Image (cartoon, rainbow, N blue to C red; front, side, top):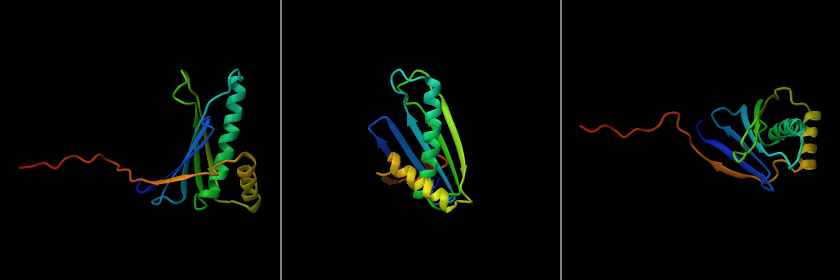
Length: 135
């Protein structure tokens, strides 16, 4: 990706999300979510809630990146856990209605999703740069 913009979010160190997009592909965005289960929480209940939270984050991501027609979200536990699982969401926002916009605004306000951001510009090279050969 050339010139990706990284948005980092952290809510009480229990949920960390990162929205990544590129100026080269303005119609795409990727949201990564790390979310650990509460102590004693049923694992299947946790997975259902994490999937719903991931969908909500992806909808709110459209507010921050209106040009994104395709938003892919991936959720997992932190690396501190012995076992991990993943949720994957692909959201097609080409037909973004005023109702969906209102829902995204409501989700953002109700659950304080992606409110505070830190923007970092970074260039990722596709291939590593090797030292030039000398004669």
